[in-house]
Amino acid sequence: MKRKICMFVWNHFTNDARVLRECSALVEAGYEVDLIAIHDYKNTALPLKEQRPEGFTVIRVRNTLWFINILTRIAELLKRNVLIQMISVIIACIVAAAGFFFAPILLIGLLLVILLILPYKLRILYLRSTIVFRMIIKGMARNYDIYHSNDLNTLPQGYLCSKILRLKKRKLVYDSHEVQTSRTGYDSKIYALAERFLVKRVDTMIVENHTRAKYSEQLYGFYPEVVHNYPIPVEPEKMKKVDLYKLLDIPRNEPILLYQGGIQIGRGLDKLIQATPLFERGVVVLIGDGKLKPQLQQMVREMNIEERVKFLPKVPLEDLLSYTRNAYLGFQVLNNVCFNHYSASSNKLFEYMMSCVPVVACSFPEIQRVVEGEGIGICVDSHDPRSIAQGVNYLLSHEEEYILMRENCKRARNLYNWQNEKQQLFKLYEHVS
Image (cartoon, rainbow, N blue to C red; front, top):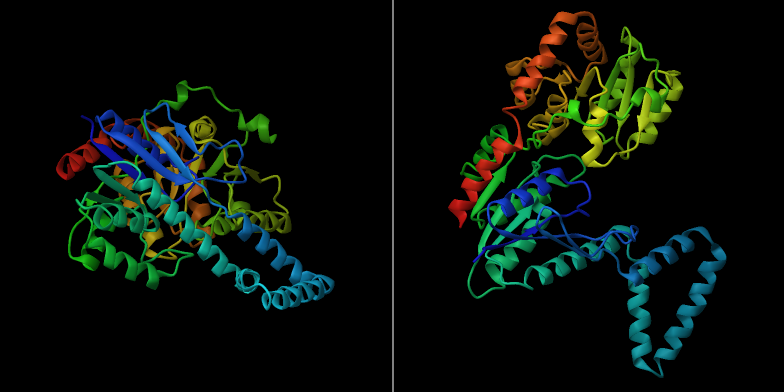
């Protein structure tokens, strides 16, 4: 009889390559896998339940409450319109007066007023709490043998389902994709307290590389399992090619200098654009979306380099390498804004490698180990636009070394790939089971 795994992920599961690979591998190993994710109410085509061709089931919990949406819209209107504020006060007075005659009306009115005046962040916190509750309900709906929480924001769900709510405790795997105690955009103190409490209660913890494993050992006194985030082995040169030159109207004699991934703070993309005028030749193409994108586009306009920097939106994961193979070189120029960045292995580094695209990369331990150890690119000071430009110009002007780097990519991709790495996941699950 197949052992059942309940896996949690805090996203819509539309573009999560690591979780897709792990679910598929566990199905291959003979497990029955249900993945509990979050629905996107804005995407009406996204199913609440989906049977994936890889053999696992995706169950999405709703991420909206109709009255929260209404109250958020009302709150926004109140801030903008004095007339609506006056009308709302009159309505509140009527509700209060009615309450003297019919107490339930007063209670409902008070509840609505409280929800209405709550700050936006508290309303979001309330909504997220309902998502957690719904995930727990789904996690308890079947008799699972193992729970697998991806990242800290799903670890409470896994802990409650595996250790608290069942009479017989189940196994719990904590798969930490990020360094939760040092990460941009997160309150590291709160996350550190939560992780410190929960991590001692899991059966196995997974991290992305040995730099992060050593860091976790210093924090918690044990060395986690390491499962690298390597891509599935493919040969992009045999795939149908998306012609970026034609798509973006780039002259054929100009090399494409590619960045693919999230357009976010700390990725070194502002430094990359500052470096662009120093490149001897080439057009920078950024494929992806994120909060920083409008700011970077404005920066490009102000620098008057629209012909040298092009933007494309995020493309489907299964199509990405058809775009990547157009590149002369790829960028992975993370900035050291937190330990999460400093310790990253970076999936995009291996995607460039898979497409035989040499890289200009930051000099951080895990990335530098692969880039210089395998001879697939050049490491630079990713905080200095001049250093980035020197790296690009070196690859543009040293053709023999560049050709050797492409050959090294082809050799290295036979080592750094999921077909090999998933064996570590299998061993880990054999031990847990």
